[in-house]
Image (tube, rainbow, N blue to C red):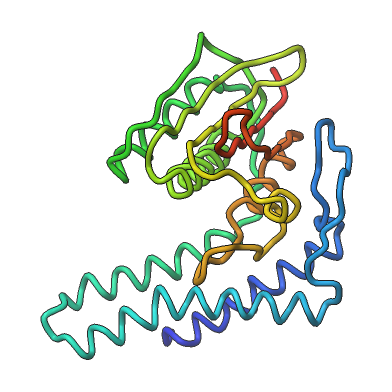
Length: 245
């Protein structure tokens, strides 16, 4: 299949999935125990949502596919295989957000899952993350999908925290196994706190703005929740809760 046909199919699928999500009630932020706390205030109509989705996807493809390929045409010293692999990887990343995030729920150790996410992220990006955990926390979750969520959250913390001071803490209370990820960046703006879960909301040019909305969707499918706030001493905090086993 031609690459542009593949890209076109992906765009239709992503936009279609986003609009279906709006109709199925996914356009709300959800707090503890699934209580709706705040409606989305972004795109107000289906047409606006469609235009925003196309704008974000177009910017992402220009940044991660079109520009690298154009650079390779101008600079024949660039390794063709590497450029092609990077372009394909960018499309694969876009396709990743099409996954529904569901999966079989089973009992697992949240501490083990967080350790694996931290280890994978440190290996991929050569960034040190401080992990705090006191022992096993048995939860009901889909470990593979939760790993994806934690990886995304760690990545956001490292990027916006300027690659320093990222801490992941595992804890529990009477109902929830919890993971708190903190960074030393500037924290969330009031608008970002309000809209960060909104699909395609981003403050970075060329980004999709699907990371936190995808994370929220996956965790909610596991009967859990995601909370965002600024830390008392500065920096952003993202907390994930999943049910105890």
